[in-house]
Image 1 (tube, rainbow, N blue to C red):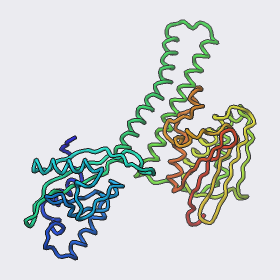
Image 2 (image 1 turned 90 degrees about the vertical axis):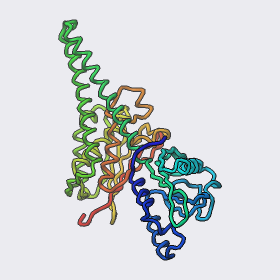
Image 3 (image 1 turned 90 degrees about the horizontal axis):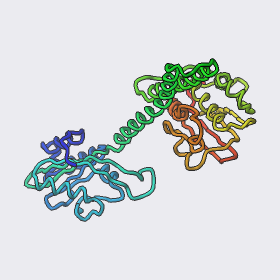
Image 4 (image 1 turned 180 degrees about the vertical axis):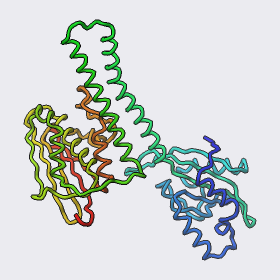
Length: 381
């Protein structure tokens, strides 16, 4: 797909074409200058490739070869002999044929396992060059994978949020229409309608509050409002907040903290959210009474290690990688009445990460589920 978009990489390429990078291309350049310039280009996040009129590689930086792993380009090698780089060859030929700059978007799947084993989105720009009696084509490649993933995440979030809000809103609207029709004549039915409307209005408020919390957590301009607090007291406040649910489920809850309650520095509001969501998630996922819930805090020299463990139904292996995604619900929950906003664990993960920490999940279905939070300690704790 040919575009007219001028990216940062394209602007850099225009500077190259204007002669500012002539030292790389000119055969009579000072060798030390060439090495220095090449070292600088290797620090660029954009892939840079320069070939001559015979498609012989004049220069290639590290980013280019990382982007197209395992296909490697080497100075002196021929572009046409590099298997798997057909898109680059086509772009170079197109630019040479048109004698002008051309741009294209490329979807590229890396053919090996690992963290990069997914579809990548690259924006390519190529343009002819001529310097010192030589000519050829330069290519700039910008990795837009993260941008595409962010855009997709944003679209998915809007779609999911709309669906989650529409469901309770439709129910409330239906009951309002029923009440307006005058079909309900007795007080008992009227109270039941109002209870349902109240329940789903509260659900909508919870979703909106959670969305606002996520939005704040993902903001880059708003620092945490940190203070020193006792973690045990924070957990106890969360348990008090969940008293109605605890009275219904009747779990056996044990707290294991240092005698002083365990001191931590962070934004207390988010830690209230973290413990409330983790405990509530355990209780709602395990409707049976007598669930054993163990909440523990250990302090080392450099970090605080917090665990929330239960002996309930657990989380299936196929669900485990996705539980921290927005609006994701495990299979066992999808078959039942909606239990929450679907944002709780997503908030937990982002809140922990906002404090410089990490969270891990270990689950053995039918035996135990453990969330482990590791938070670095600051000076003075």
